[in-house]
Image: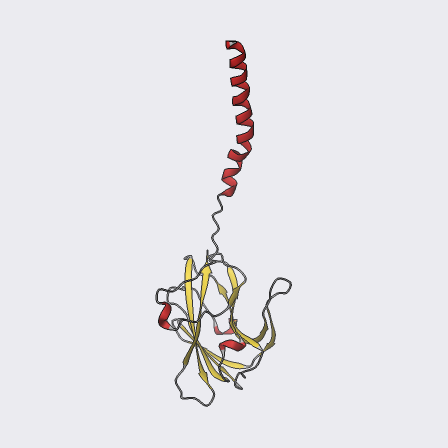
Length: 189
């Protein structure tokens, strides 16, 4: 009987090994190092923070990238005369004025791609230290159902992290003070 007990015990060990080995071999496959920013939060929720939509084609560091900062109809209260985009100081990359455009955009989704439909003629001014971008459209951006985008083509910075861009707009017929439109947080992996 001792011999039968050993056989049963050996069979039981082999069976456990065969049942658990596929699971144990698949554990390294679950280790996914890519992290997506699915949750965005602010320290001070009462500050009037508004989240703006954005899209980037590539989120890897030091990669060539195209970033769309959207101004949807519900992001504009009235016609806009001027748009200012504050670029974070830690977003260390070379941005050239000729690689910046302003356009009417079709925002993509599951079945379509994001792309510019029509370029909007505008004067674009970038300050020396690449921390502020001013866009002066030749005619005011109307309050209608069209979406517009600031498009920046540049290389991503070397440092990975979250970069927050703030947008301000000067409305038609208002004071010369720019109003806060919202913020977009770009993720570089």
